[in-house]
Length: 224
Image 1 (cartoon, rainbow, N blue to C red):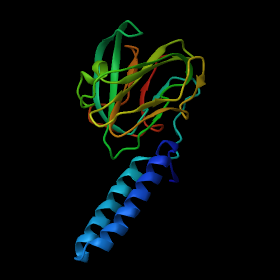
Image 2 (image 1 turned 45 degrees about the vertical axis):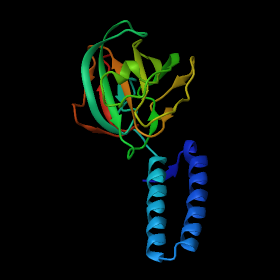
Image 3 (image 1 turned 90 degrees about the vertical axis):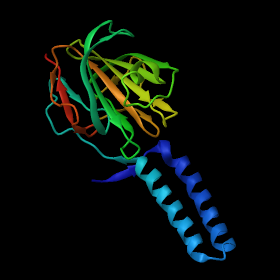
Image 4 (image 1 turned 120 degrees about the horizontal axis):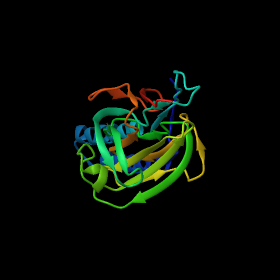
């Protein structure tokens, strides 16, 4: 699988590389006991590789059938942490199935569009920075809500949620755009979660604890 670096990380990685390189030179020059200097250099190199891993952007392609536009594909890499009936009161104002995927700092943090359709609503909300795997993070944390109307007329709400470490949510889509499951909906930096709110009669294809891959894993089918 070919992997490139997400553009959200290019400046961060460049600055981090320069800082680490300068720190490594200073450590090697001023520490008389060279094993200590090499230890610091190795630790800084590991830090750089961890951040590099965070901003990787693998090329993804959904291999299933979406000719009828009913496929719901995971928006992110991570683990299914919530799958339950809830009342969505920001936009849908009805009961829905909430399917939530939690990302650690080791996951790819690009966010893919989960369903094919038209963007009908985009709104950013300021909030807290609770751990993103907690249920209250969906309503209390910094978040962005996006609604997509599918070809079948169903409206699917996708919510990008910041976590205890995440401090920036980026949303790329705008109201009125037509999107497909190979498009990007946004990016969340350093640990977070994405909720998808689905119609009650949706056929769910995953269970709690399942691993998902953004842009690839079929998580549900909307009944046409």
